[in-house]
Length: 157
Length: 157
DNA sequence: TTTTTCGTACAGTTTATTCTGTATAAAGTT
DNA sequence: AACTTTATACAGAATAAACTGTACGAAAAA
Image (cartoon, rainbow over all chains, first blue to last red; front, side, top):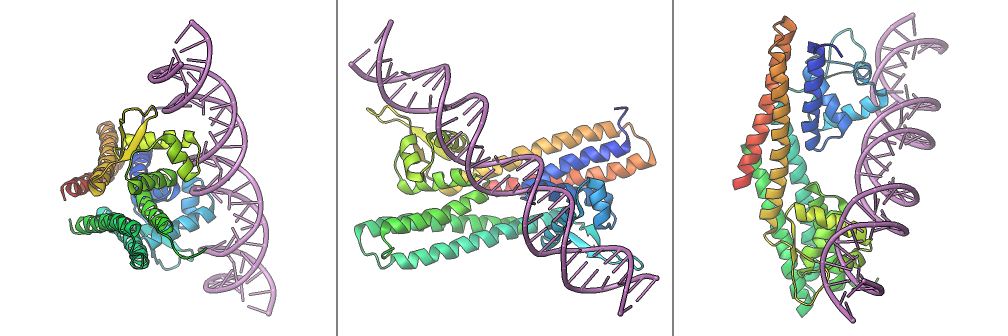
């Protein structure tokens, strides 16, 4: 290793940045891919990405699809170019946060529904044991409500 | 399967509850374990847990240690009982949130530090390319700051 | 229409994580 | 002190996740 080139430094930024992105629940590859695209600041093809990260095109295809579904990258058009082109979305924070919060809210809402179904079933158990169970269930449901509201708050801030 | 017993229902609650806990970054087993302990509402030994979840005592030992490090369960004493006893902490929401927020803040702070080190190195690159890199770096650092403040806010709400 | 290029489904491989059993250390009991 | 019992370190087995290569359908180019 000689001295630290700019190329080199960008790579270090990429590595650190990707670690943070992983915390949002993306896989290591998706994270590195996003970080790379964000730092590159230009539309690129699956082949470009694959070469840059040293991974198969299949990997790029599935990764980019996930990033795209999560609204973190966008497909763009450029006349004369036949291959699909993708670009990292700007507004890093805004996009990551809403991606994150949405994922939480979706999950929690689904859980709340499941718990509600259980609660209905439990109503037919008019026993001592049933009441105990019901109390616990209420606590758990309440926990979910608090989590939900906590993430809802996060959205606007 | 006959009709749904109370036992049965508690188990369903456990399954759903555990799914939510997984979202906080605990492993499936840790999640199930915590959910079980929380619903049981009484101190229990590694053997109790192992039997209840059908897993080895070793698994219980490591899982309980993680839960304990995360302040989600506590070791308790009971005279006459020789084995270690553990109990799920109450204040579900408060404990989970602070566990979660702390983990985020720790990670993000560490990342910010790493990026700061990179930034210092970059100062010696007084080239066109270096300036571009620096701009990107600033954006990434800024992103981290926003994430940090977002989770800081979460703490008090 | 034929040929080429591109993207993705799918099966299989590799890599990482989770879990178990054995061995050992630490603490309790006789 | 010798003997039990309990908890955990560690190495290896089982399981899950990530990744690749081949194959195929769709769309563009010839």
